[in-house]
Amino acid sequence: MRYWDRAATEVTKDNPDPDWTVGVLMAITDDGQIYIEDVVRERGGPLKIEQTVKATAELDRQRYGMTVTIGIEQDPGAAGKSDAANYVRLLQGFTVRVYPVSTNKVTRFGPFSAQAEAHNVHVRRADWNHAYLSILEKFPSPTAHDDDVDATSGAYNALMAMPVLRPRGAAAAAGPSDADYT
Image 1 (cartoon, rainbow, N blue to C red):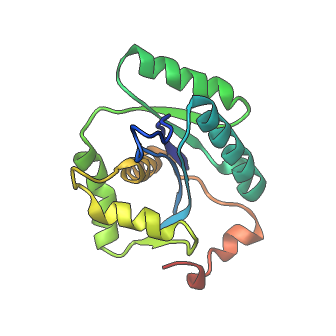
Image 2: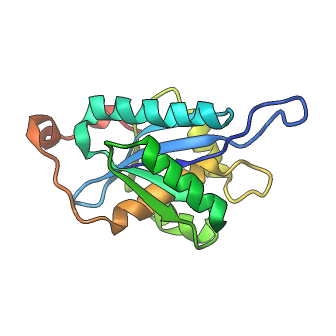
């Protein structure tokens, strides 16, 4: 599951630290181990964000095959519904699911946080680790960005609601190497 928490805000003189668009790629094994495979973080206007989401979907397809489901967070109200429908059209040919937001951020993050505390979360070693983990560690600070948190809880909660999918092929059977994860 690649779950997106989208923002469409550019860095400006008046807003030097806007929200991020974040796409978290997460997998859960049959024995309940959670793997954070990749995190994409981007800032930019609506067109740049659409391009990033589409390019990431294409890259995920190349890397992982057709099994990556794309989760799009739907904000409340008519504008949120319209925006989510636009992403479904943009990502035609991919498996896209829309997830309306209905509870507060702390409540949504609770189930994932419990798994992290139980040492059931593994994060692929990559250049995005520091930014990603520092945001998660600061939550729920009211002054910190929470885009990574929303994308993470969205991915986890969406995966938990999905029917069980079994990976196929020799690579899937081998599983990830512990050396690749923190």
